[in-house]
Length: 162
Length: 162
DNA sequence: CGGATAGCTGCAACTGCGTTGCATGTGCTT
DNA sequence: AAGCACATGCAACGCAGTTGCAGCTATCCG
Image (tube, rainbow over all chains, first blue to last red; front, side, top):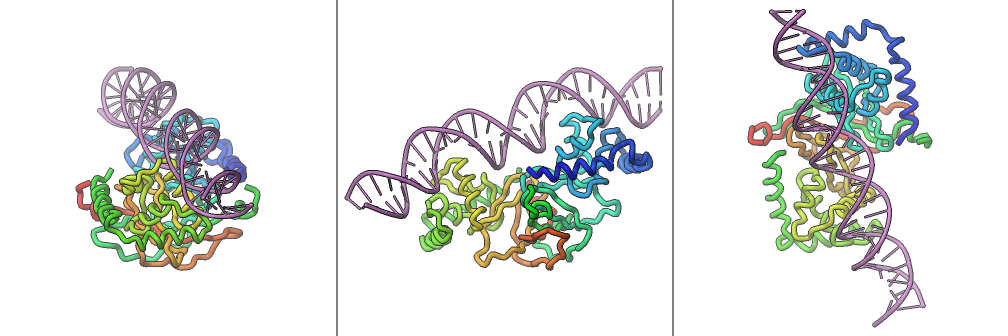
């Protein structure tokens, strides 16, 4: 496991400290949730904001750590994440270690995405750039999403201190 | 779970029946294995040939089924697959259900690949076409492989009989 | 040819991520 | 304020993959 990932994440969480971030953002997240016709519970709002603020796709474990004071039950968090994915507010991916990673859906909802996946520590970085070209599809197949995956080692894991 | 996938795979396995396929192919597979400096055991040869003949990336379970008469221990199969991946003869991916899928590495070993992943039944199809463009990498990141992922529903799962 | 050795193989137990069932609590409607 | 649907927490489970260890075997070397 990549120690640096933990440290970096801790740093990120500092930024997300509830005493620091604006209530306006919370309201915006709540709005997005209510728009789907569902309840804007504290758990959903908080998790969605976490995802929005994250620089990379997060695991269930990452999020659990990041929630800190507002501790949720393991299962509840899984269900919140399931709900976010189902309602289109988040995306789910599996990393090299076959654990799910979640990222917030962009507001404009672009179906094409570029990721960098570190084969070493498993982290997934969302790259805004490089929308892939529209491909030709095989017979009878329906396309819902295009994803360009770049695999290799992230800066830290290349650096040697993993 | 997609019944059709099982049926289709059974059909594929018929083609791979040991009484039908050529010993020449077995020898070719053995050669590839020995070239790495390792032992060409029956298990490795058989699994590698299975992967070469497969039209899509296979799960551990698929392969276990496909071996039929030559039954391997669960763990041994996992280890054979691990070895194939480590030695570069096969690639490992995780599907939507977060289970590993294995595919034979192309002889020419192209680092760019295109897959179609069915979000419903989880199957992964290797599309030969459309090698993605060379992207620009972030700072300090080293790239080892590019993969274009098309997600949606395969012909069968769209057809309704899943 | 035959014994030694590295490295496969098989068995059993274990880990970790995710899921299901059920009872309880809570946000939203009227 | 009351009621109901839905969200939460707890416990137990399932599945894919892993680890440890003992036994087997292909290959090497005398």
